[in-house]
Length: 325
Image (cartoon, rainbow, N blue to C red; front, side, top):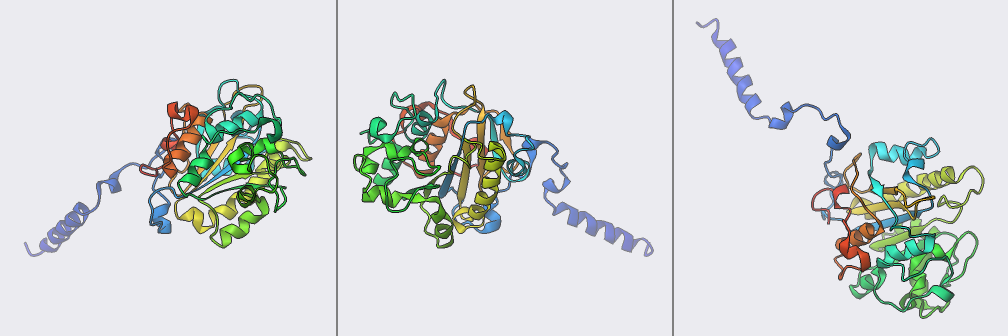
């Protein structure tokens, strides 16, 4: 019997050790896109929040999702989709809402105020206070709009370089511009050249809500040589990583990359979510519109009432980890 006792003891020891392992250790490896590792990156970065704190919205232009997803013209975007991002396959501009300007207004207010053209603030400005950045200001939540090609020290009510006011919804509200005043101090403080984003990230001075508009050559609107999609993808390849290495991102940040409207239709258009609190590599087919983005922003920042059609929309919660907002 002494010859077999060591074997019995070893077997008992192995059994005890195995009993201490979690059941997940014996689970099969996930093989579908919907079963990817959804562990929040925030746990790895030491984020103290567990909830989204800072949002960066990056606006792109005039392409259906079918022309972006899987396209060789957009290698950076498709690398993100494969590894880091959550995305939506059924995100649309509001029904029959075209051209650009009404869609940008909808993202800010949940309505287009009856506007169906791209005219400037001089003719399409609004007296309404029922819009997102007014709610943020009332709640003492910081916000900025970083606009490529605008000059510092001016409220950008007019086109300059490859900047177009139709892609900057905040300048259509009198409470932002002081009634179309190009010297409005409030407007100038909140409308900043895109070139200031990088130093603001470095110096930890970004706002909690940041609305980023590339210029017409970088947002896929115009083909300025080399292809509109290629130029926009290359711009994102430079812009997104500088946000992702910043503490404002690692400590509960979220980047929403979306397109304003479908090309020849209402979409679907792209909605890409990057965040330590997003589901990496995940995609869904939930029906979303710009009202969904607006509702999500209101929920993240805790401002009410829901604006316009946001009151009736599904939010983007499914693209995030539970409890992210």
